[in-house]
Length: 369
Image (cartoon, rainbow, N blue to C red):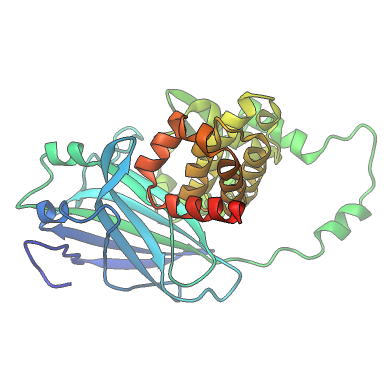
């Protein structure tokens, strides 16, 4: 787009790409010119970058300074796939980092393993023109009070990582059945769970809400491609032995780690707390591209959602692309509309995701017909 004091100008001072073992990574610097004018955009509008080629696909990064979450404005970005996937889906991650445009040094760069003003998300794209959820980059007021808006502009380094899917080993199940089983032997999940608890041989420490977790890079990377890109790819975590993870509770991260090592989430089986944990884990699983865990959380919420929590669950379904949970919530709300409208979750839903009202109206009409 052309430079203008009243519109978004995404420029690319430099770009580079790196082919990894199972991921392609491209880094672009986006300079948002005319920032104050972009604040006048409608809440439902966004401004796109030029087309970006990564891993044989074309992408856009969209920007808005007007994402409303919990009555606060956020500067936000999202990733859009323009090409049709060659397989059933394309897994990609968007990582945004605030930089100093004068010398391209990351603002709040790594200091003792702590990252400042840096966010990321991942998404499995199933069709062309599909968007990821919005990445809440920084609260608008915090950005405006900082010293990094200069001449009504600021610069963000965006890293797009596209995972190259590999075929699963077809003979694994056959080999497993051919091995002899002994009554005293332990299962693999039991052994890996013990490895997580003891921390034996760990090679990186992840810090979440002040709690440290000693983990194994190889296990995380072998289980999920987003960790492969982070821990063995172009991202700086690959060079660190201690990394702080922001915006997540320690209990939620602990449950996610247990699933990564053992493929089990006993926290979801709790009668009441299981629903709350499912809400938090759903967001975490979507962020890290852990599709099976995300599906398990979606099923738990479908079973455990009631009139009081339906609006909150619908907001989660809308934000994280959970079609099954969304359909369940719409059905429940349409059947109990008056009661749901009295809940705090419904009020928050109308503020944070007003467009979902259209789906709700259609659900009510279908029920009446």
